[in-house]
Amino acid sequence: MNTQQDSMVHALQWTDAGLRVLDQRRLPEEVVFALCSDAPAVAEAIRTMRVRGAPAIGIAAAFGVVLSVREWRRRDLDRWRERVAEDLQLLAESRPTAVNLFWALERMQQELDRHADDPLPEIVALAERIHRDDIAANRKMGDLGAALLGNSKGVLTHCNAGALATGGYGTALGVIRSAWKKGLDNVYATETRPWLQGARLTVWELQQDGIASTLIADSSAAYLMKQGRIDWLIVGADRIAVNGDVANKIGTYSLAVLAGQHGVKLMVVAPTSTIDWRMPDGSQIEIEQREAAELLPQCYNNPDSLVQAWNPVFDVTPAALITAIVTERGVILNPEEQGIKSLQQ
Image 1 (tube, one colour):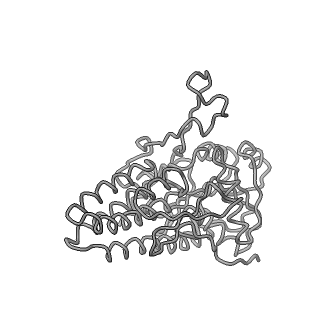
Image 2 (image 1 turned 135 degrees about the vertical axis):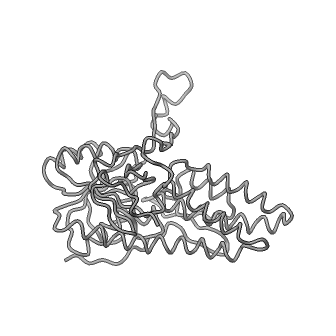
Image 3 (image 1 turned 120 degrees about the vertical axis):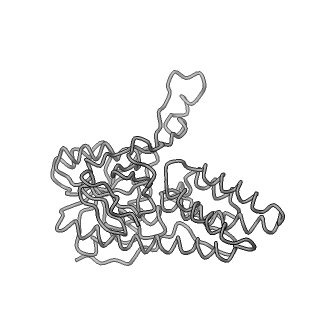
C-alpha cells in the first residue's frame, strides 16, 4: 500500500499584508508568489490565470472583498459601500464560467448587508471560513470518490483539479490522493492544451506528494483507453447544472465521449458551491472565450493574417455520459436519471 503526506501545496495564503497568490503560469520552473493588496489586483490575478480552478477563484474573490472593504473604509469612509460595490463588479467580471466566483461574492455581499457599521471582522472570518470549508469538503470528497474506485487498475485525469485549483487537497486530485493511500498505482494525466495545466501543474503537484504519474498527450487518450489501462476518468468542474450537465476544461467532453466508447467510467468531483441551482441544463452555461493569441504562433498574431483561432476555455459534458458526481454532501450515481436536486439544502 502506498502512503504519502497530505499536500503541502497552498496556492492562496491570506496574510495581514494581503492575499499571497502562487503564480501558476510560472510553474513548474519557478515557485513565485505575488502579493495582492487590493481587489483590482485579485481580479487581475483571476483574469490572467495566476489564480485558476473554480474553488480557488471563489476563495480569492472572497479575500478580494475583504481587501476592498479594508481599503475603502480607510480611504473614503463616506462612500465606502459604493466603492466596494464597484470592486465586487470588477471581481465578478474576471471569469464568467466558474460559478464558485459568484457564489462566494454573493455570500460576502450578504455578510456586508448584515452589518451597518464596520463589517470587516465578520467578512474576514467569512472568507477564512470559505477557505477552510473548501479544504474540508475536498477531503470528504476524496474519501467518497476513492471508495467508488474499488480495485481500479488505473485512472486518468484532465487539466488540474488539485490543491492548486482549490483551497487545498483538491477535487479530482483529492480522490487520487485518497486512492493512492489505499493502493492505487497507475495515475495518468493529460497534458491539457493549450495552457498545459496537466503537464505544468498536475504532475508537478503529484510529484510534491510522492505520487507517481504518467503524462500523456491529449491525442493519445483514446489509445490508452483502448489498451484497457484505465477504469476511471476523473475530472473537476467549473459549473454543474441542475440536470447534471457539467462545464469543465475544454477537452473534457471529448474525453467523456471516448470513455463511453471504451467502457471507462467518468467521475466528476466538485463541491456543491459549483452547482448553479438557477441553471436547469448545460445549454445555458456561458462558455468563456479567451484571446486567439493564446493559440496562435506569433507570426499569425496580426490583424492581416488569414489564420484565426477559436479558443473556448470550457465545454459541457452531458449528464448521460457521467457515471458519478461526487460532492461533499454525497454521491450522485448516473445523474442523467435523477439530476442533482437531492443535494440541495
